Image 1 (spheres, helix red, strand yellow):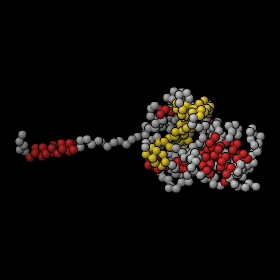
Image 2: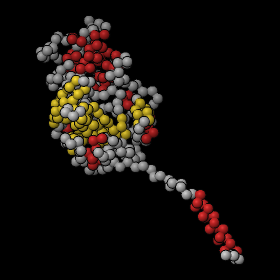
Image 3: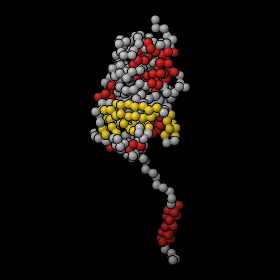
Image 4: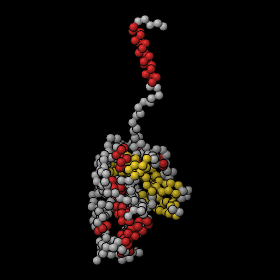
Length: 368
């Protein structure tokens, strides 16, 4: 068709240009929407009756595969819990972050934070199965932490809110040996015994000195604190942090291993504001470079020679002789009245007893 009026000519050119632009943009995807965490956290409604109500994990729940926004983490040295294994995660609401408050102080977490700790055994008999026993939550609400414990059912399909505590018998295989435990799930009132600072509940394993290590996230290995900062879960942290070692690592210095073990297993009670603050010892990693804070050459304030199967200890730690050291007997018993730590174990941590005995026997201080 022949176009004679100028207006139609301009219109025809415009349509051609529009069609050309449209053709050039074919195949270019629209801008992806920012991913949002599906976690449900109504601080007026928690704790929920079921673990699945939070949407921390994809289904099936027992895979413990976190959804977007739920980050796994792992302390350098772990609290001993009758050889149970643990998977830990952290979640925070949008647009808030934790802040650094010192190497040996738990991070200052924002309200709405959830710390998620799952306890499980592998190669459980019969069947060599993985069995999750409990999931413990700490949730920060209005500046204070609350506890919420979830006990898993036998089918491993769900965990239910339960603060009454209890026991679960477990038989499992580890390093070619068959082991068993009547695993103790703590009563809610017991939680504050360990998570205690001046009667205020606090997390234990989320201090920078515990977290300053590499972790592999979906194939990418990165320092955990750097990952938290990158993800928006941490504002900043210093380049130098007084950091623990993994007490399992026999390539590390023996004394550093012992100090790291005492920190993660004992320091939450043996601290200025902890449950055992009336005792002399201060087992925090930042204190135990002073040997007397570990109990070396410190006389006990009670007589334990009447305990069954106890020798004649003279000091908390007697250099050169673990059998004269109270700490050895505290660690090497399951008697609830005597054992240390007070909570969290019903078995003897054989490897730790051996490590600490070796270290005590290597000491040369003179207590006279």
